[in-house]
Image (cartoon, rainbow, N blue to C red; front, side, top):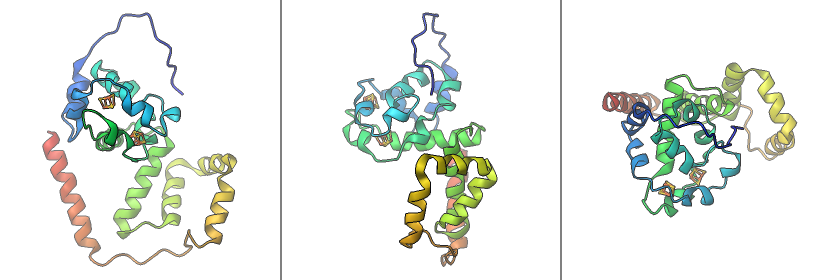
Length: 200
Ligand code: SF4
Ligand code: SF4
């Protein structure tokens, strides 16, 4: 976890990072955050985030790029939308978090296992048009190594995994690729190209 102690050192402001964020598809919403904290008190995963969404937006404003990009906040967001429905400014925080994740991956801020899982999930979805859990795990292990799986097992995930297997929730055989997979991939690639063009 990040050290949340308040430093007495003078704050150095650097708005180049804020400009970078505001240029993202939904990044401009960070500008209208009024720091009320409703998102922080509404968020179910706030306790395991390095910074609450409110604090993350403040760090963007003061130019703390390393703190923002290396924090686990966006990776801990479950996209539950609770903050979005309660935010008095109507900020779609989930969309901002998605933009931050994409930016973190693009710029190589992928220290968190959640980043590897996120990439494995989308690579799997892209390659089949649907998600195969075994495929995600294989991609995740290739990125992070078996040690990460051992950590998950140590957290008591083994019983959950076995329970899911027993109830047929985790297929052992990969499902068929969807019809029209090529078209889907073309749509995704075109959307990515458009997003990159708009970000320039
Ligand atoms: S609820 Fe909305 S306005 Fe309030 S701190 Fe969170 S993002 Fe900002
Ligand atoms: S969408 Fe993400 S940030 Fe917002 S309340 Fe849910 S988990 Fe927290």
